[in-house]
Length: 458
Length: 140
Image 1 (tube, rainbow over the protein chains, first blue to last red):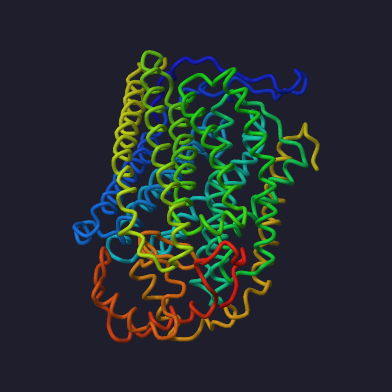
Image 2: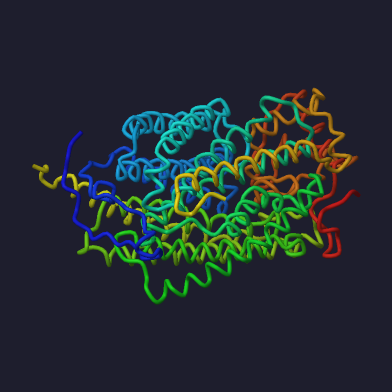
């Protein structure tokens, strides 16, 4: 292992607890106090996956607009699953990278073994999964698009991460208790969700049941990665030392965590009870919305600084959007119009790029280190990327509302021929988003290379 | 609830509670009854299973949805195989239509796909045709 001097950076611990209750963090457990070279593989993998996701997304957007000419050249049944795979791989590999870096900072036992496991098996999974889709062996399902036989490999990685986390729960919890349970919960739920999503390959299920399992699995995986990424978000923001949330807030979070999924399926034949629970859970998320609105005031008064600052601001703004639109779309009467349209795609795109990708990039920026001379450039690029994303999200929402309204009169509408002009902004602003993201990634990789050139520690 | 000054126990306790809630919820999904017609679709029926295989192998959900879940480029296919429409389904899949490419399926695969879509058709109606439709779906 090569030892380098980490870039000097002041560590801010927000005084949320009285002095006597504040967690005691030893010098060696403070972020960046350990002079450890960050894994190059774990830094490059999420960045490469993000760029490939953008490329495939851009091609899929082009295919949407110039459909008839590009059907054979850009087959959507390969492009779209590849786009999804790379998006998920970016998030998964980002989580594994941040987990290893956070674990190294708190001196977690077994973290180096897990680092080596992730460095080998994670790229292997991504390559094999992509190959399975290209060769026609993908699952044919949404989100979990790779060959089902590869899922155990991914589950294994979450098991490894989970074991290391729970062996070191105390070390992770001492500097940031609220972050720790979110990270641990994420690992557990992503593992559960991946297994549940493949249940149909093991047992025969009636249609309604299979539908429920498939989407509950996806929701649990998504909720899991959101939990983990928000946990890392706490670590990389100034909230290290944030105590566990109040029990009643936790109980509320737990209820919504496991049961909101039903709002994907109000019209489907799944059990009515699930739908009623889902409406209740989704409306209770209004409390979370109010809390985030209140938190955003603090964001305006004192925006987060440091290398992750612009990413954290973007993630917070998109969190408000995602929760707000999620609650709105979960209102049954609104769902009647918007479900099954690009409006839902707008919601998930805003969440996956605006929150998940921003937290992954912010986390990598945090652990790679700061370059004050180019901080403004990164801030501008993050702003441009998110402005382009906003335009795409608004366009998709508009298209979704148009379709939802039109189909009330013509249920079997051939949507593509009517609305393709309104989808033209997608590849246009997708290009802006892609260019800005590429430049952000180049900045991160340049910083990482610069950090590795720092003379070895004595 | 563990004491807030013992964060380690608090972290493990909170994760464990949600894990228990998860299993309770999954148990609920397993035992609750869905719409009768959907619960009546036999998953072991060879035609249904083979049709589902065709649907998955050709990644139909990339462009098409069932009950609004899936891709949004092409039309939703929940009720596409309604009685009397099987011929149209076969012709569209075999020859393509608009941006949809043609798929070279065998006769058995065509039969299976139609059987799968016919089974789906019997489970309910989608999309809604008026704002007055039941918000939690219903039968024709």
